[in-house]
Length: 171
Image 1 (cartoon, rainbow, N blue to C red):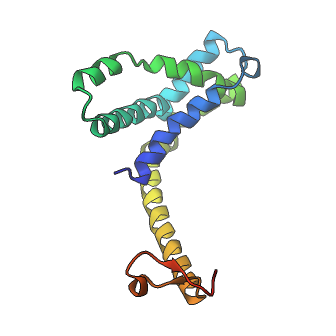
Image 2 (cartoon, rainbow, N blue to C red):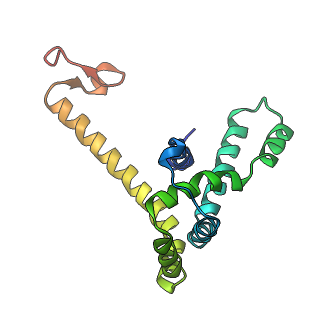
C-alpha cells in the first residue's frame, strides 16, 4: 500500500527529471568550474544523497510490488544506475537559476553552523509537516462530509449500509 510520504518522495526525482527535459537551447552552457561548484553545493546540501535514497526507496517498492521478478534482476538493474547521470541532468538546471557567484555564496552558507543545521533538520521538518498535512486533510475531508450530510447532498453511511450516497434532494 502506498503512503503519501512515499508517493511524494517518488515524485520528487520524476519532477526533477521532467525539468531536465527542457530543450537544450533553453539550458545554459555550464563550464567545468560551474559543474564542480554545483556538485559541491549538492554535496553540502545533501541533494545528491537524497536522489539516491529516493531511488533506493523506489527500488524497494518495485521489488515488493513485483514479487514475480527475481531479486538478481533488480540487483543487476541497480548496478546500471549511476548517480552521475542524474547529476548531469540536474546541474544545468541549477546553472539556469543561479549564477556561479550565487552558487559559491550558497556553498559558503551551507558550510556555516546554521546551513548545516538546515540540512540536518529539513528531512525531519518535511516528515512531520507531511504528517500534519495528512491529519489536516483528513479533518477537512470529515468536515466536508459532515457539511454534505447536513445539506442533504449525501445520506449517512449508516442509512445506506455503504459509502455516503447522493440524496434525491441533492440530485
